[in-house]
Image (cartoon, rainbow, N blue to C red):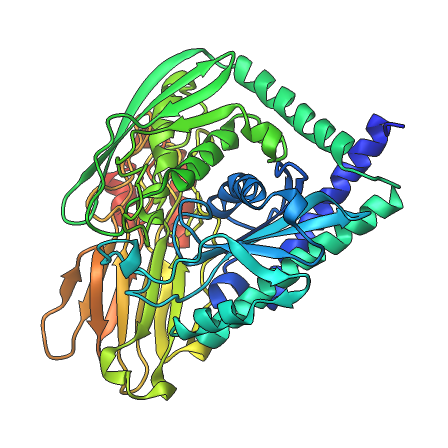
Length: 552
């Protein structure tokens, strides 16, 4: 007998609780700070056909939305009939998983009466997989580290020790990698146990009825939201910093009764540096951005994702083909929300925020080559900082906030405990938010140096250094980013946004993240809001007078 809609809704809510418990299990068990402190993960539950039914709130669009497609790929690759209880499958193939080698994706079949009834899955970032590491300097995927094709990580409860040995042998952080892999396993197992328990509680032999209810309801609600929008096609372009020269991203957005299509035709081709983006990753952030404004109250699953389609010419920088280098694919992949918002702002002129910092300011660090002979000085870690978001039509932008990535900022104390680095300053950056009726969010200023006589290598690949976030509807641009190296016996040096640099003992790296663009004319900002910003240190008295015309 088919469960009632009320019972199905209760079970749907239970799935949402299960996936959140999955995500928290991963965060609590992980070794790497980027997982423990920053939440760079995803977790989800899927039906027997590999369709996503629920995702954890904790996580990033780049992991969650790529996972939604990756599980179907792995399910078809291995086949349900070949799976055994206790199996867990793994890949870090960028074109299947999450866009670069450092993200491991796991999938575990869930059985009832010896039949596969669904899957749990998760993704997280491993800090180091050998090669040139987390930087943009690789000439192809083989330079960037260890690629693991779809394989069994666990076979009927037994871990593939050869695979674990290979991962350990190809990493500068073997202990952290091993711990993170076991955390991923625990995440899958926690979700599988809870899903099995729920099915037993409700006496379910399959998830078929629940799956159709979740996917059908979500698809219908999303299509209703799309049909209420203006129909047509709109074009947009965005100039990004690129590596040595600017890169042009192009998008055409079409809204119809059939759904929404985004086409990246016209986008520049791939580069010889690792800022190229597999289409799965570009799609993940594009669809996330659209879903933030179109049916945002509808849970994210296969049904609510289905009406959105993203295409791009093979070989363009948003549809990189193997073996293109893609280690820093987030650099341009996280710019796609601003790109598609340029289209959507023409269809919905009063609903779309201004441009923001967008690309997270990722800061991979590791020991220098002169420390290679001393294992006690080896380290590799990845810090994450954020700039300001664009101002919204009726609200200021958010300062030092992760959008679209969702990756929380790194913690200073945890970083100093894990590696020989010292933070001297971390503060909001005055005057970095674009002026407007609503002000753009502020960026940050971070000062960091090696501890004692040590040095470190920093791998830079960030955006908004040359092309700042634009305002919308009369708002002004936010401040661009800036990175400097301060040397005690040499002039201060501005560093480019991309490249590998050595920060020696006694030197300081000053890292200034961009601000978001403003929304609406600055002259229309309420005087009280301007004065409050001056009091809080968000804008300087000079800016209040010259930009906003405030009598300070």
